[in-house]
Image 1 (spheres, rainbow, N blue to C red):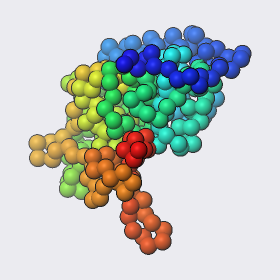
Image 2: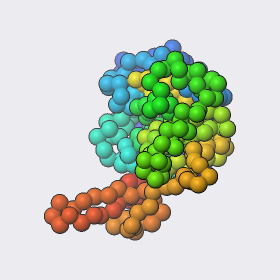
Image 3: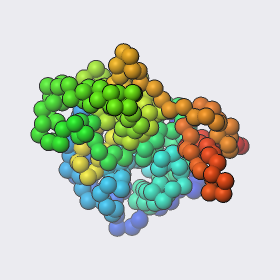
Image 4: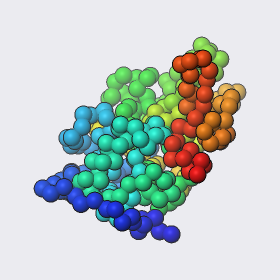
Length: 288
């Protein structure tokens, strides 16, 4: 089944007086040109003139600009926030895109052609007919080791990543392991060190040689970057301190999953710890 041609009957009508997808055509062209360059140079941060959106910068404007520049009337949209389909951020973005672009929405990963996400990658494997758009607050992977934007540009250009490796080594000396829990740095296409956005370590292996096109948008920082399908994405690690994903002591208490990323919930009554799937769409499907 061609997901891009899949449609539901309950389609909405775009708001009168607005351009399709809210953004004007010149702004869309700017984003698309930047996306083409980002796809051609995996992991490279492409600057673009981030236009104003009806929400404050830092609330997902970069991801929204990519989605609105690429979405078509026949697309099906899924929006998640830290894996949840029903959070305030996800619901409002979904409603906004539906109003200005007349696309249908879904909570089913397999039915979606465009998925916009904040801080998670869906648990269900995606296909080459889908695009995953990630909202990015801090696109610069070297920001923790170098505050100067000019210097980080030079470091990327020269492939000078010694300070990042030193940062990881100091982390091991201090904590006995690499303690980075999210925004784990990766090497893309054996060239650029990239920030995969604040996804947990659990999601990082999904980026490697994936069928899906990953697009990253940082509206406040005015940067776009991408991981094309079948691209090498390797997390930074040492021979004696390998990259590892999170482990959970118990399965999901709702669907029983043992192979998904779980959120830890502390019971206010007795202080017990409960675990539930972060990806609500995945959990709902397992429960049906």
